[in-house]
Image (cartoon, rainbow, N blue to C red; front, side):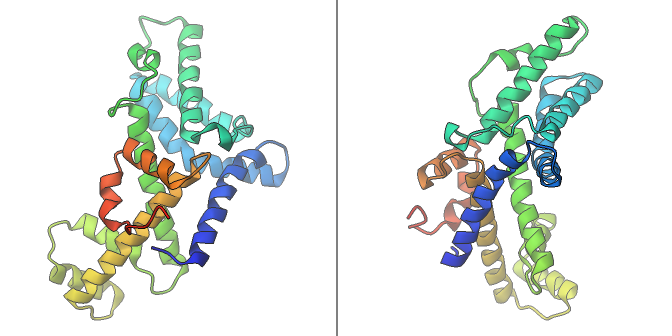
Length: 246
């Protein structure tokens, strides 16, 4: 699925992701950059989660903003990757913020809040946090592909997957014609199918790297468990080589 060199860079990226949390505490320029990176990475998931719990749009936006400010202030810099998934830490922090906000305001009749969501610590399939996190993981994997398309001349993985998503009913011939027009280079249908297969493999690789980066101990078994928990395993199962866990 990837060369040993690219595998090494993936592991480096994973460790760097956790180091962002450590760098985020402090007043240096690198600390500020780390906090900004955390906000860009996780604020969409936080905002969607809060909006799913708090029906009042103004209250939801205030809470989401407070959570983002916590990221900006480096409140999560002490997170320990050995203690598990970062998404769990973030979820608990946001839920506690919602609880505290509700209690302080003492507006039980005017704050439109799904209390059952806060009291239930289980992780059902329809948990709004799972749905929000799943969407963010997919978005981040696609952004990684998009960045590679921009940085590597001739790379078309993101372009092709985006084109397939926008035109799901196109035949290989039609999709090849679209790509030919976009690139200015004639592309046959059989070549298009090979490129699409490679693009999907690249996406699966980025998706797994993204999930591994949120785990304290990203073993193949834990990565697979997280894929199952997020409902993403079926998306990549057919793209994974039989020995991917090795």
